[in-house]
Amino acid sequence: MSRYRLQPTPAQERVLLEHCGHARFVWNLAVEQHAHRKPGRKGAPGFAEQCRQLTQARAEFAWLRAGSIVVQQQALKGFAQAMADFFGKTHRRPTWRKRGRGEGLRVVAVEAGDVRRLSRKVGEVRIPKVGWVRLRWSRAVPEGVKSYRVTRDRAGRWHVTFAAVPEPVPAPDTGEVVGVDRGIAVSAALSTGELLKAPGLRDTEKARLLRLPRRLARAQRGSSRRAKVKAAIARLKARETDRSKDWVEKTSTSLARRFEVIAVEDLKIAGTTRSARGTVEAPGRNVGQEAGLNRGVLAAGWGRLVERLEHKAPGRIRKIDPRLTSQTCNARGHRAAESRQSQSRFRCLACGHQDNADASAARNIRDTAAGHAVAARGGSPLGGPVNREPQHDRLLVG
Image (cartoon, rainbow, N blue to C red; front, side, top):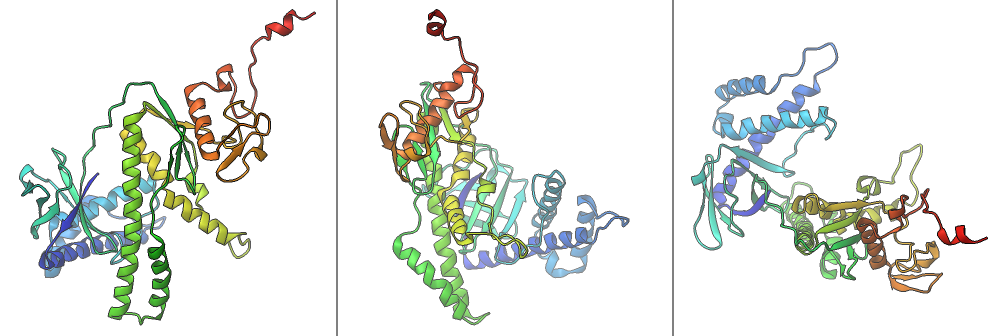
């Protein structure tokens, strides 16, 4: 996806919000139809039948007819795809959409003249029943795009996203392998010794983000003051997300350009960030600490970094078993939990080798992926059975 910032006028923004409202209305009707489906009843209507029902509804209601048929039909198309993903057990069941959350619309049958460049940093895109809307030309629009999606985030910003498969980053053809260890204090530690940290909010911004929810709790529901506070909170969170995404994009591009093979830990992030709250019968333990850890994992962008690496360097990503990589000495291979003395310090109990703990784990990941570890003899370098080769010196003894 190639996303660009839209700059609609106030009049255009009103029409875009109407389009979003129509798409949300059609989507929620489809959700309601499927909610009434039960065993023994007639099945819920499919996409073709829902399009016929939409035509009848547009003929009856002028406010719905005033909207774009393309936007409304694409909302039904998106719901049909969401249901297919649900039955395919790859996604959850689609639910109701609320105003202000996930606002957006999709346009198909895009022609070459529907996107044009005006100057070095300004372009335009044609949106049905809205006209030409300006966008920030931050990079070239992919050629041959057939559809795009217009979205509005909670901070009130509009974006247009063109669906296109980008070309992968070419490999450097040097044979160099890098190991990447992901953490909280250090977002990504490389086997080269580089320690990378995903940027977040500054201290002043964090303090403001702590004050705003308390101000929101004192504001009266439905008041303009409450709306302003919610917008301020949304802008801060959007700023934090933008910085994290920008760091992931730049880091993944740099790794794909510099190294031929990139080794990462095979982490189960969904299980790692699962809530520890528990139930009434079996309440969780250390819920506050677990919640803080979950926030740290998500802020570090563990999953997004590997996802973008797989997009930019397909076939060059190696996922390594993460067990005991932070407790193994990269110099001698001795393994002990006590060797990792702190979050950042590693000192081997056997040989006294000292290193940054995260960088040492990254080197172990690199060596395992490159085949330099004990795994070359047939077993796992992190434990388990090993098919040992004959020890010639011992055979000669006696």
